[in-house]
Length: 478
Image (cartoon, rainbow, N blue to C red; front, side):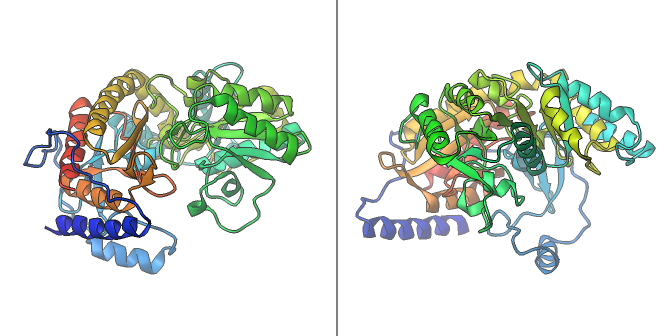
């Protein structure tokens, strides 16, 4: 089979690589007698029949994409999938094959693909009015802002709507600089905060950065309990922030921004207690504290509605996108009335931000998440999924770390548990094999050796078991 020959090639390449560097070759075989079933696992039953597809083939789509779209676009898999339909936690390709979506359109589909209540809200509003901008009154944007503000702690009650996470973080950085009167921002190494010219500076992964001016930004040591030099000691990581303030700035900063669980960076959860220490330091230096909730928000972590709540803090500004719209181009910035007032110095306007269709759809998302108790669901299914992956970790030495919360997990593969050497070749082979088995996952981390498990929040226990069984089966063949 093609995947088996791919595994053999990858193992041969990796064996030669590690031998050149003086390491013993690492075995991915189970570390106990237990092993996966001989036959591949079967995707759970699902009561939906996709419509017959009559559009262009995947090859034709790819040819047109290469001809007319930018060359910076990338795609997953050696032969990219032509996805033509989605329903809740499943996707369908041009041949009608069903896949378990464990990546949710890069952590964007919260309620489920084409959720009927969200879809109905979008369609009904589209029939009446699609666009008018905020120069006129329309109830949808106010209703949505009120519902969103009700989810926020403290005095975080003023909402700005934008179209993406990058836009949200750009606006948050602008607010921090205007309010504080300072320029310098602090973000974490391994962070991802967007791909615009401003947010590229906040991002700290070289694979996502162009050689352009950074814009007065400091990247501090990442409080990563698995890879970090200080383990889980939040106080030592926080000291690096204070050192940057003391030795790298005038003593005053505009703000600090962080994801509570780093998404693109590989589902890295910050050391416990870190944000509380850092927020105090930053505020003493005149800066504002920004929580990037683009991936962690809306109950995905299970334990809390917002990721920052896991650290026991209340930010000055919160940014969000992705899950807020279940696939709509929608983002938001929420802050206090005092901080928001600085934006009134000039005209601040966003043509599409908070348009009637996106506002109706986003409001429906909030209602669905509450009605279907998705935060509680993420906690339950996430606990089950984590426990099963940790069982696999006991059996397969290649699994170096299982981390995250709720339905935002990372599975890091290594060729040496002590050295934590990235298992890049094996990850690539397993990625392809999981697709063959009907499972779509994401990849993250600087070396692409972390599987990102972040499915739609309707993902259930049967899906979780199928996902882990597929991992088990694929790993057993390495």
